[in-house]
Length: 511
Image 1 (cartoon, rainbow, N blue to C red):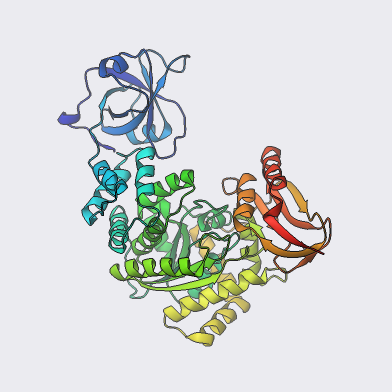
Image 2: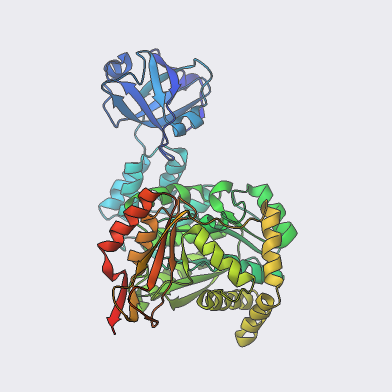
C-alpha cells in the first residue's frame, strides 16, 4: 500500500537512512534490514514479516528480508528493492521508520474461501483493493488464486470478481455505440491472429481498441509479439488518439491502469504456472469491460495438449464467460476451434511476428493455417459488428486481406502507436532433426511451448522455435522437425537438453 504520510503515520522514533539496492522483485516491495539493526531488535521483526515503512511523503507495506552477514548495508541503513523505492521515492539521506503492518482485512475473506465459504461482491472488492494497494504479499495473493481455482467459484462469484477487477482501475468510454473486440483463451503455440483480425475489421470501418496481456504461461502473448513491431506501452490518452485516428489499436493493457489487479495476479499466476477458469474469465472480461468494448468474440482452441483439452471443458468455459458477460452487458460469441497442433511456423514473440507480417502482406510463404484462422475470427467479429453475416462476412474479410487494405491499416496503426519496424532474428539457431522417416502423427503443444520458453521466450524477444513439420506431413530421417532460436548459447543448450529428454514433442509414425 502507498499513501501520503500524515500525523497518524508520522515517522516512528527509530529510523534508518534509505539505500537503493537495485534489486528487481517485480511488483512486491521488499526491504532489507541488518540482523543487528536496532529496529529489528526493538520491533522484534523476523524474516518475511510484513512491515510498514514510513517516509516523509508516503508509506508502504513491504516484505522484510534480513541480512545476517556481509557489508551490503551499513549499520544505519535500510535497503529498498526497486518496487519499494519507486513507491516511496525517498529524498537524498531521507530516514525511514518501521512498524508491523496492520493485518489485512482481506485475508479473512481469503481464509474463508480456502475453507469453502462463498464470497460476496464486497469481499472480492476488499481483496482486489488490497492487492492493488500493495497490502498483500505474493504468498497471500497465491493463496487467493489457489482458493479460487479448481471449480471452487460459483457463476455469481466469478461475476463479482470480474466487477471488482474492473473497478480497480481506469475505464475507457467511446462515442460509438458498438465497439468490437476479440480474445483467444491461449494454450496454442503460434496462434497469433489478433493483429491480423484488428487490421481487417478496422480497415472495414469497425472500431476495435485492442488491449492485450503479456504471456502468462506461454512463449508469447499478443503484447509481446506486437512489441517486436511497434510500441505497445501507450497510456490512455495516447491509446485514445490512435483509436480516434485509425479506428483501432494493439496495445498492452498493463500500461494504462485498466484492471491493474489483473496484471498483478498474472505475475503470481506465472510463478505458479496456474491459469484457472474463474481467474481466466475475470481476467478476460475485466479487460474487455475496462477497454469499453460492447461486443466480443472469444476463441477457445481445444485439443488434447491445449489449455482447454475437451469439448466439454470448452463448453463449460463458454458458459462461464457468457454468464459474466451478460452481467456486464457485454455481447459475447464464443468459437470452439481446433487446438490439436500449433498454428503457423513461429513460436515466440519475433518469430510469431514474422508469420503475422507474411499473412498481412500476402507473402507466398505465409502460413495458410494462420491466415484461415484469422479470417474465421475476423468473419465472426464482422458478423457480430453487423456488417455482414455467414459466408458474406468471411468473403468481406478475405477481400480486405487480399487487396492490401488490412496490410495498409496495420502499418498505419503501427505508425500511430510510434513506429513500424521489422522483428529481429535470434543469433543462435539449431535444427532438431527427425530420428527416422515417417509421418507426423501428433505435436505436443505444451512440450513444444516449454522448449520455446527454455530457449528464452518471451523475455528474449527473438527466442523460441520455428516449426518445420505439421501433423500429417511426411519427413525424412534427418529432416528438421523444428529449429530452436535463442539469444545466448546457454539458453540454446538448455532448450536442447530439454528436447533430448522429451523425444515425444513431435511424434512420428514409423515409415
